[in-house]
Amino acid sequence: MTLGTESAPPEGTPGSTPRRLGAAFLGLLHSHVELFGIELQEQKARTVSLLLFAGLALVFGLLLLTGLSALLLIVLWDSYRLAGIIGLCTFYFLAAI
Image (cartoon, rainbow, N blue to C red; front, side, top):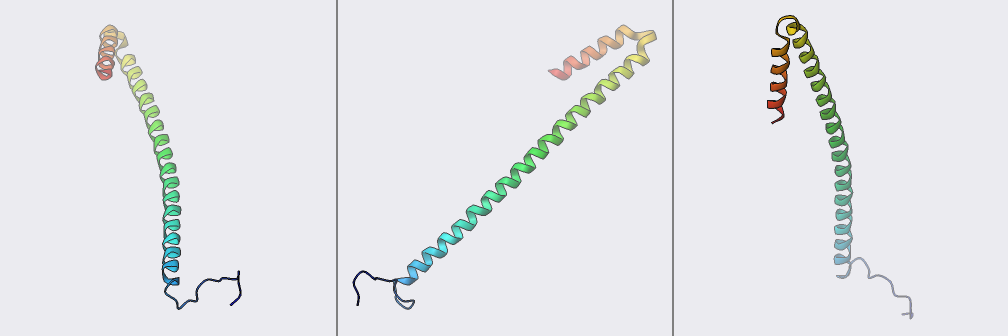
């Protein structure tokens, strides 16, 4: 036996089993943390795209509402212009509440 050259116990000794079990546990934990990071990145990308599509839907919905309001005023302009304007203002006021 030489001094200062201690090595790990051989594979058959009881001390190696907890060491291998700990290494396997750390490897499993590392894999789970890595998978969690990947899932978090994918969820972030999905959330950003969902917010982008929701914003676009809101913009196009407001454009549709503006176009329909203009169409209604064009149709009612000759005979009921004041009633049409008051009706649209009332509608927008009630929608805002």
